[in-house]
Image 1 (cartoon, helix red, strand yellow):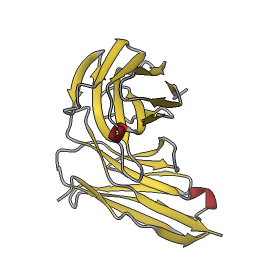
Image 2 (spheres, each protein chain N blue to C red; image 1 turned 180 degrees about the horizontal axis):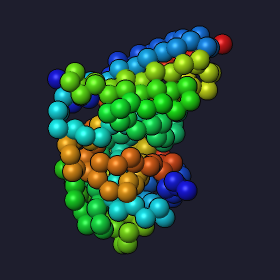
Image 3 (cartoon, each protein chain N blue to C red; image 1 turned 90 degrees about the vertical axis):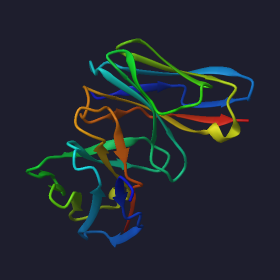
Length: 112
Length: 111
């Protein structure tokens, strides 16, 4: 089973709201990723957790706050977002570094 | 020069045709290479990993040329369902969790 699940599928939020995106995998993968993808562009890396520790933050604004409560779960907390943050947010996992990544179906976020 | 470059296409080919995509990468320290396909408004799905010896999965063949720093994907006997964007993905360097995505090549298979 190579499944990564994400909730919610769609999210509409105002600029003053606080919301969270959730990602889960049960493949025993030790690396988990958040990507942002705008239309007709490739995914852009935001954060990487390896062995439940933040190992990469691609200079993401602090209005995005990642959290890895355990080896199967990854959250992305959102606060005071801007309309330009509207995008598809993808979670991925991989066994470890340099391995193939498996993506979840994404959360389509609209900021109004 | 971009770290990973792909021809964005679109490649419009008839059903049954053979089509090939290339992807060049700039970092000679990269060790892992992948092809993903992405359908409109869906997540990327792993198509195949690319090994030094090349690999084949049904109608799909991937090759790696380290000397020239490119990878290729060949699709034989194209089906309508092969219409998608094909993303070339390269790890930034050995031992890193950072992956670099190409911009993707759009393929449309025509009936």
